[in-house]
Amino acid sequence: MSTETFLTIDDVKVDFKPGETILETAQRHGIHIPTLCHIQGLEATGACRVCVVEVKGARNLVASCAAPAAGGMEIYTRSPRVLQARKVYIELLLSSGHHYCATCESSGDCRLQDLAYEYQVESVRFPETPTRYPVEENDLILRDFSKCVMCGRCVQACNEIQVNQAISFGYRGVDSKIVTTGDFPYSNSDCVFCGECVQVCPVGALIARPSRFSGKPWEIKKVRTTCPYCGVGCQMDLYVKDNRVVKITGAEGSGPNHGSLCVKGRFGYDFIHDPDRLKMPLVRKDGVFHETSWDEALSLVAERFQAVKDGFGPDAIGVLSSARVTNEENYVAQKFARAAIGTNNIDHCARL
Ligand code: SF4
Ligand code: SF4
Ligand code: SF4
Image (cartoon, rainbow, N blue to C red; front, side, top):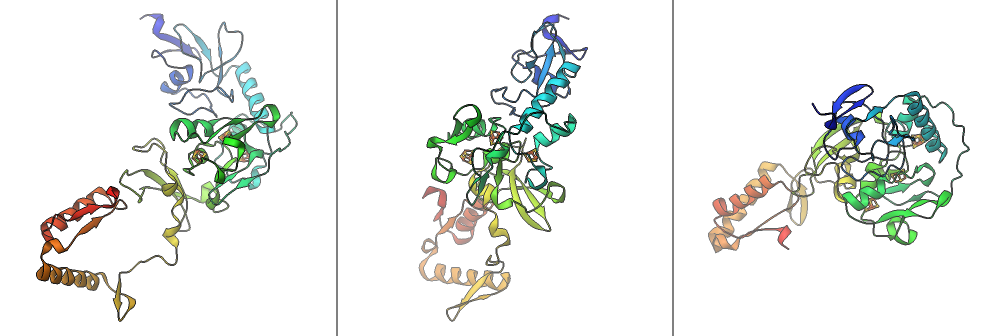
């Protein structure tokens, strides 16, 4: 075996694939290296430095997310130098804002909180950076700049995953901030409220506003389902508390959307518990709608269709299908038009 395709991690000899980073090689072999800013599949930014490792012969610790694996490397992921450096980086991240977990929406689902626990960071030696920007909120997204650790995940998600190009890094030094073009609020910018940035934010800096204070992670039951809004079939996780849907996120690691959603899928769920939601068919009698049974409603529709067909022929009837139903239901709709009614007048709202 050639040493060219092997390296050692914590004294264990492992293979690596050409083009792999140290982090990817370690992950493929089940070796844990903590990360915060890294998004799998996207260009590494090395912003948080939490994933540093020691490489024998290298003067400085290297960010494993950005360093290519090379033959013969001797890598140490948990040497005293590495552990000490990670603790300092976590302290710096904690001091970079106002991290008061007690009422933070992300507590229990926060990468920084997890890292502080894992590395037993019980106190922070650096002074807290004063909050320079007020909280910005609209109906859907809350931005708390006091908790932003400038990891850049939201920028990558917006620009590289959703390709919306709505946000970027702005200002410098202690004034650094994630900004929209012109530093306007989200609601007055190119933001389309897909919420991708909210989903990837590893801390409590970006919050789904409608879900705020509606339940802690350990009170939530997650239910995997398919988005009801269009035929793409995005997979989503419903966050259910007390039999109510309180939040929705895209299902990570599952096609076709791999965690992404659009504004409708992510935020358009208030209809589920709306008191005005129709739950029974309505039939108009003497100008007034009355709730009725499905049997009665369907019999009435069948009678009327038959009357139109008998009086004017099947082409007097047209069927308009919907993007809000599944492909299978659309198939059944055209079958109904062609086989049951006897007309080719079948169309779909997506052609409008
Ligand atoms: S963002 Fe994380 S570390 Fe900061 S207050 Fe919230 S839960 Fe705590
Ligand atoms: S909600 Fe979507 S479009 Fe708006 S900033 Fe976040 S990722 Fe970009
Ligand atoms: S808002 Fe969140 S994802 Fe964006 S840079 Fe700040 S901490 Fe990172």
